[in-house]
Image (tube, rainbow over the protein chains, first blue to last red):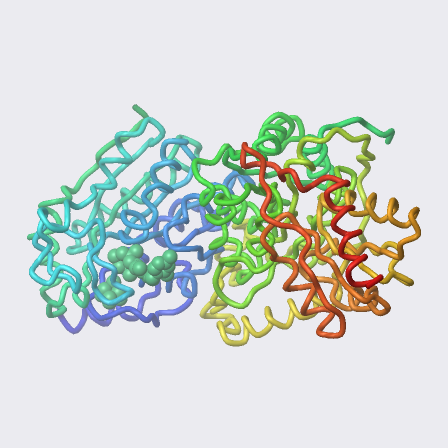
Length: 252
Length: 359
Ligand SMILES: Cc1ncc(C[n+]2csc(CCOP(=O)(O)OP(=O)(O)O)c2C)c(N)n1
Ligand code: SF4
Ligand SMILES: [Mg+2]
């Protein structure tokens, strides 16, 4: 990155962002996802309707940094909690922000049931294929071959099983109205992911049904890689298991 | 409002709605199921929501979400279902979200589960154990009040007898006094104003308005529960002033023990009854006073001995405390078994009095 570009990124706060300081590692993809999420909420004019329900992971830090109502809840349970919130405030734009450990491992039942119920909320899953917060262990979404602290020689399907493709599972349910998978490893994918977020938030807020956006994010720390190699690793491994694009637009 | 003849589960559901409950989520498990069915029937007419949740874990987390959004919310279950809910009950105690848990238990075997909890962290759960349908109706409304007053999840310890007995009940709304405004509840309307809100067990606050953080936040919560422990002890004491023997029981065992005491008094025996109405906070001072002149304390509970720990903590070593009940479950696993009868209890109280008091 050039000197100029670095300055631009570091100095400009996103809309609704209260502070530029966060706890996340250099090269982490989550803050990029936060930024496009806040831009999407702001551009849709949803800031005074938005309620975020957040799981446990490195991304939880957004609760401190963004100027919208947030409820931080138990690991995996955000879609159930968001259901209660939405049923009490049907006009609110309720979304969950969760990691792959939160959704694919601890909370798979919650997300599938909530999608099947066509609950009018959006779930955003930041998928880095690892429990980042706890230091780099294998999640249900880790890709085959991925080295983690609990799959030292790489995830081996024979021993560790296969990754869970949550977006595909959600898309198969009649209650989901929109499902997309984006990434944040280059400018083009960031712009696309933002479009996915806008469409998902708009549709669920308008009552179309459950919407789901998975965003592949870099975790150089949990991947045990030099920071600069994060985006390339994401493309070479994650995007092979998790193809990008819109999986579903409109109820089945 | 005139009295109505209602089945317990129906009466509790109506009382909850009368108290303003507009969100309910549950998963079937007898004897709780009837309350879920009653809520499913009655909530739509009241403009509320009743969710047939896919798991108890989801039910309690839905109630947590609804409570955080400012509604009077409730859930319920029994036994294993309550076990699955403990994580979220503890979480709600620590992030201060009020809701009511209707624990329609399978007998009296879950006293420890209800009063000790299996969640995490320094928290307690207010738990009221009604003796009959009428008291359950009253407790329902009181529990919603206490939940809001202390911003905490609270529990009713009911059972099959409470849920299934028909009783003539007075359904009017009770007034327990003013409550603080729910200015902490999330509605999403303050986003972008610099005054958005947050509910978080860690209480870290926002970058522009830092919170106390876990150390101070959890100290405050511990102090709050100390206040609750002092302020919310409830009990019923009968004929204990001159009693040689005090029989302690809780919940729907209470009326059986009262009848036993009446019959033994008629025979000239100096026996009294004490019933903790709040299982937590346990009415320890009142129990110690009720036992001041007693030569023995008998604890009748339909389990292997759970409440007896709290009785011993309350009366200390001054007077012997003896268990009177035992495990006793009917074939369905849902009801108290053969020992919950007046003759069974009466003859054992009489025998214990012959041994200790006369002897
Ligand atoms: C019930 C429970 N189990 C385990 C944890 C520990 N824990 C905290 S964050 C986390 C993993 C988060 O992984 P992920 O959702 O993928 O988010 P990331 O940190 O990778 O962004 C775990 C396992 C917890 N908080 N609660
Ligand atoms: S461990 Fe991974 S997910 Fe967590 S902050 Fe660091 S790079 Fe981001
Ligand atoms: Mg992760």
